[in-house]
Picture 1 (cartoon, rainbow, N blue to C red):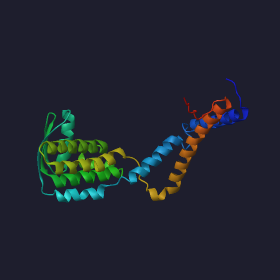
Picture 2 (cartoon, helix red, strand yellow):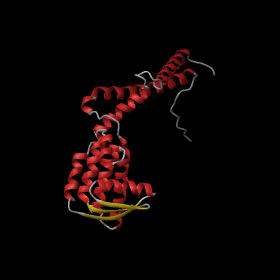
Picture 3 (cartoon, rainbow, N blue to C red):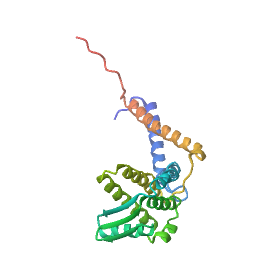
Picture 4 (spheres, rainbow, N blue to C red):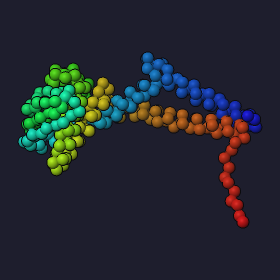
Length: 235
C-alpha cells in the first residue's frame, strides 16, 4: 500500500482507532457492571414501555361484550397448554375443562376480556407474584396462557364469521397481553422526562456514524482513492 497523502491517511487512521476504541468500550461492563449497549437497551425499552400503555382504552371492549356468550373448543399444541388455559379461564370465572390438547370454555366474553386485561395490568406493573396468587400459575406462564387462549378464540371466531369479536380479541392480545409480557421486569419511563437523554443518544448515533464515514474517506484519500464523476463519452 502506497500512501500518497500522509496527512489525510494519518487523520483517517487516528479516527479509525478512536472509532474502534469507542466500539470496544461499548462492550465493556463500565456502567455499574453493565455495558453501555445494555444500558442503552434498558433505557429505550423503558421509554418504549411507557408509550405502549394501552390498557385503559382497551377496557371498553369488556363493557361492550359484557353479555356476549362464549361456548368454544380450543385446540392447542399439547395437553399441558390446554390444561393451563383451562385452569386460567376457570379462575377467571368461566366454565373450563381440558381433555388432551383441547380446552372447552363456556361463559361470557366481556368478563373474560376484563380478566385478561386485569392480569395484563399486573404484568405491566411487574407484579407477577400477585398474579400467581390469583391464577395459580407463575406470572409469565399465566400471561402466556392468556395469549394462547385469546389467539385460539380469535381463530375460532374468524372461522365462524364473527369478525368483530375476533378483531377485539386480536387487539387485546397485541396491545395488552403481548406488551405486558414482553416488557415484564422493565420499569416504564415517560418520554417527557427523558428528552435530554434521547437527544444525546440521537446526536451520538449521528456523530458516531459520520465519524466512521469520514475515517474511511480520509484513509482512501491517503492512498490515492477518490470518488470522481465519470466523464460523458461523445461519439
